[in-house]
Image (cartoon, rainbow, N blue to C red; front, side, top):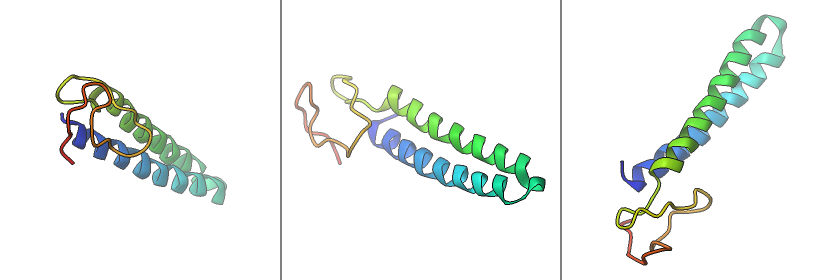
Amino acid sequence: MDYKKSYLLMAAGVWGGGIVMLIGMFLGTSSPDTMALGNGAAGLGVFAMLLGIGQALVFYKCPHCGEKFSIRGKKPDYCPKCGSKLDL
């Protein structure tokens, strides 16, 4: 997997998982009948977030030298190690 797809999957996992987690939290606190559903949805959201971050830690790297990029911030224009220009 290339670094652009990995970055998109990470962003989708974090944002989508965060939204699902918030929905689960609201469901869990709205009434006792929906507490189990809310807890399940919140757990699923946390799992999606962790999965998105985990795959980025493995696949978000330079295609030329293999140096891992920081998952914080935006995508770099140049590799911090080898200096090669990255396709954006």
